[in-house]
Each structure stands twice: as C-alpha cells, then as structure tokens.
Image (cartoon, rainbow, N blue to C red; front, side, top):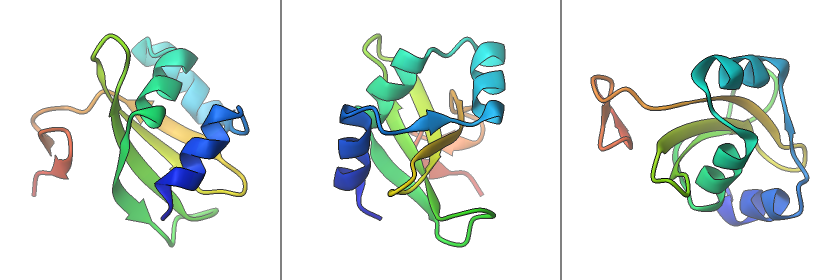
Length: 100
C-alpha cells in the first residue's frame, strides 16, 4: 500500500470518519486533530488487502503531544477512518509489532 498517496489525501482533507470511528474517538478521548497528526507522521504497520468493504491498513503514529495512536483506514481513492485507539503495550511491541 502506498503511504505517500494516503498522506496526500489527509493533507487536502479528502477523508471521512466512519460512525464507529467517531464513537470510539469519543469513548477514548481521541480528537480528529490527533488522528490527522498520527497519520501524517505515521507508518503502515499492517495491511488488510481483503478487508470486509475495501482494502485497509493500520497506521502507527504519534500525535503532536507524543501520544501513540493506531489508525485503521481504507486506502485511496476513498479514505475512511475505520477506528483509532492507543495501542495496549500488552498486545504490541513498541506499538509496531503485534504480540503473538
């Protein structure tokens, strides 16, 4: 998957949030700005080419205040934020590698 293209969509605000993502952001106290910051400074750590509705990926990035975030989103041309959360250290090694 092409991170450069995905970041380009974020820079021009060509993305939207799913209802699920909005609900989770409210529950987890994650702002839209934090999601954008983490994607713009992030890296793709997992790819889901056969995801339910369209290919998607999991991005790991840090917010401006250094909060670690994972953002799952569909890939261009239609970028939709599926969910976002702070990675649990019991499930992730350095926020990048899923523990087995």
